[in-house]
Each structure stands twice: as C-alpha cells, then as structure tokens.
Image (cartoon, rainbow, N blue to C red; front, side, top):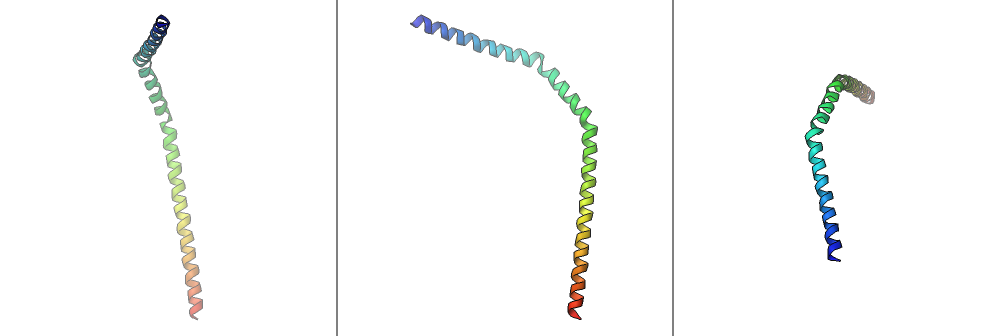
Amino acid sequence: MNNKKGISNLVLFVIIVLIIIAVLWWAKYFSKPMATVMMQGAEQAKPAIEKAQRASDAVNRANQAAEDAVNKINEDTANKINEEAEK
C-alpha cells in the first residue's frame, strides 16, 4: 500500500515539475514575441482610435450646442411669460 502511494506522489511531482518547466519555457520563448505582436496591433489601431476620439469630441460639442440652444429657448420663453404676467 505504501509503495502505491509513493508512486502516485512521484507521478504528481513529475506532473507539477513538467507544468512549471512548460510555463518557464513559454515565458522565455513566446511571451516577448506575443507582447510585440500585441503592441504592433495597438500601433495599427492608433489612427482609428484617434479618429473615434475626434468624432466623440465633435458629438460632445454638438450636444453642448444643443443644450445651450435649449437653455436659451427656455430662458426666452420664461422671460416672455414673465413679461406677459406683468402686463
């Protein structure tokens, strides 16, 4: 019985060591190229991101102008109502 338990512990130990070796091997040989590919993708996407930012800024300015126009109309309407109430 002890012998079987010893073998299963040895198998578990070997599996853990193989996993650690695989992770270290991946980190050494594949993590840097993967980071390079990801950064190149980000550089290629940069013009599209900038274009989207400009479009977002334009929409924000349009929204602000619309809010200003609504506020102006509301003020004008309120002023007219007050003037008519005073007459």
